[in-house]
View 1 (cartoon, rainbow, N blue to C red):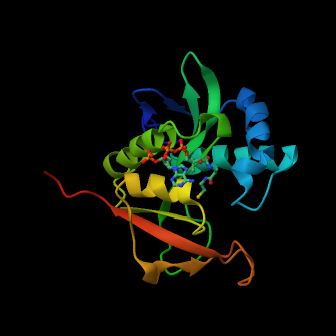
View 2: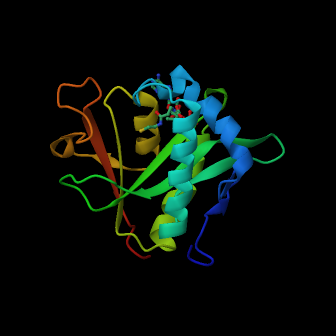
Amino acid sequence: MVPGLNSPSATARLLLRPWRDDDLPAYRDLNADTRVMELMGGPLTAAQSDAHAARTRQHLAEHGFTFWAIELPGIAPFIGCAGLATVSFTAAFTPCVEIGWRLAAAYWGQGYATEAATAAMAFGFSQLGLPEVVAYTVPANIRSRRVMEKLGMTRNEADDFNHPGLVPDHSLSRHVLYRAKKPLPG
Ligand SMILES: CC(C)(COP(=O)(O)OP(=O)(O)OC[C@H]1O[C@@H](n2cnc3c(N)ncnc32)[C@H](O)[C@@H]1OP(=O)(O)O)[C@@H](O)C(=O)NCCC(=O)NCCS
C-alpha cells in the first residue's frame, strides 16, 4: 500500500474505505442478488464473492488503489464498492485503469454510485496522476452507462469491443467503452 494514497475517503454522504472482514457477509448477499448481477454473468456463490473481495483487497495492497468498500455512515456499514482497478485483460485500450461500481439494490437510484465514482475519479487524476480512466459495460446496462455519462465520460463507438473473457457470440460479450481524460490544469 502507498502511505497516504490508499483511499479517496469521505464524500458528502459516503465513506470510501479499505475493506474489512465484516464486509464479506453483506458482499455475499449483494453478489447473490440476481438484480445486481443480471448483466454481469449472474449471481456469485459465497465462495466466489469472498474470492472477489480478496482480489479487490489484494489490488489495494499491490497498487495503492482499488474498488473501495462504501459505507453509509450511521445508516449502513457496507452498501457496495466503487473505485479504480487496473484492467486485467488485453484489449486495444489497455493497459489502463478502469473505474467501476457495484451497489446493493436497496441503495440504487439515489446518486450514491455517481457520488462515490466522482470521488474515485478525482483521486485517480489528482493523487495517482492517471492520464485517463475508462469504464465499460454491456450496452443494456443503462444504469451503469448513466453513471458514466454523469461523470462526464464519453463513448466513441469505434472503441466498442468483445470482452476477451467470453466467447464472441456470448450474450454479454459486446461492451461499450467510455473514457475520461485528466482535466487540464486551471
Ligand atoms: C450501476 C449502479 C452502480 C448504479 O447505482 P446508482 O446508485 O443507482 O446510480 P446513481 O443513482 O448514481 O445513477 C443512476 C442513474 O441511472 C438512472 N437510471 C436508473 N435506472 C434507469 C433506467 N432503467 N433507465 C434509464 N436510466 C436509469 C437514474 O435515474 C440515475 O440517473 P439520474 O440521476 O440522472 O436520474 C447500480 O445500479 C448497480 O450496482 N448495478 C448492478 C451492478 C452493475 O451493473 N455494476 C456496473 C457494472 S459495469
